[in-house]
Image 1 (tube, rainbow, N blue to C red):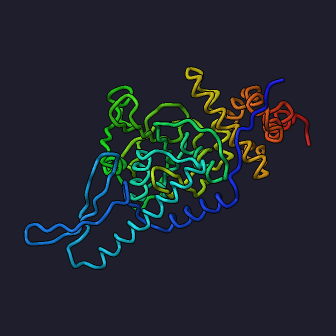
Image 2: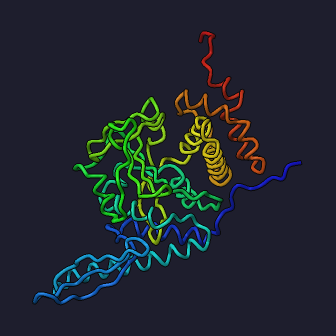
Image 3: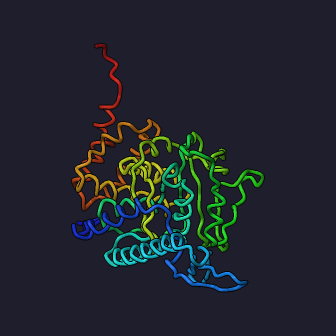
Length: 356
């Protein structure tokens, strides 16, 4: 008889409360400081004295930002408070990492902080992919194994809610990490991604809904383009306010609804035929998040599945045998998936040919 493994464990209530407090305080903090909290230093040069913030935007890369003239007490006090808050946040994130909360690396933190400060992360972009999965584990108070990733996948709705256009590329350049646009395919196509140098360099992809996978569409309000993915209109409907832990930061952002995230991941796992390792990762993320929702939140997965596009449903149903294996240790969650995906569910959703 196969060994039944649990896909997740729940954090203690005290730890979940600690995370909730951090998220609440960060949500009202406004601008976030890039990199390490840093320190204030007074420099005297050409007859004038200026205060600078000295910090590290990336490991081993020292930088400084001018704060104000000496004597500008209001500006100096404001940055001092920001540094103090950043120090507190960093300590909280460090503690949560020790408690097995999901924390992405410092490069991811730089990307998310700059998108937040540019006012476009919460307004029109949602975090998806593996980083979105990691964020939902924290939000739901669950511990699970999550593969590290060098991809930051952010998804935009076609109609953005920005008061004024904001440049995605300028936000990436503000990280000081050295991002460069990735050539499109074909080469004359506009770029939809930026990347750091090196084969394993951090990559940021901008995605949006489209009937056909891999097309390039403009996002004028971001002065950028996005790559299309089928059914992202379903995924991005009514996103949830949340946060992501990365580096020493807690960054406010939006995530797709977790139930929709489950079904989109299941669909993706079936469509990645040429990339079996990524397909397995998507399946495991769908199963894990679905188990948390069904067992801890009493979520009826069949309700959200009912609203999914017909094409997504048909593809997702092909993954039921794989889900049975993945959820061998979670009979309650498997029952929810069976109700949504099994033959009985298909029969219920089929229109009746009989008259009224």
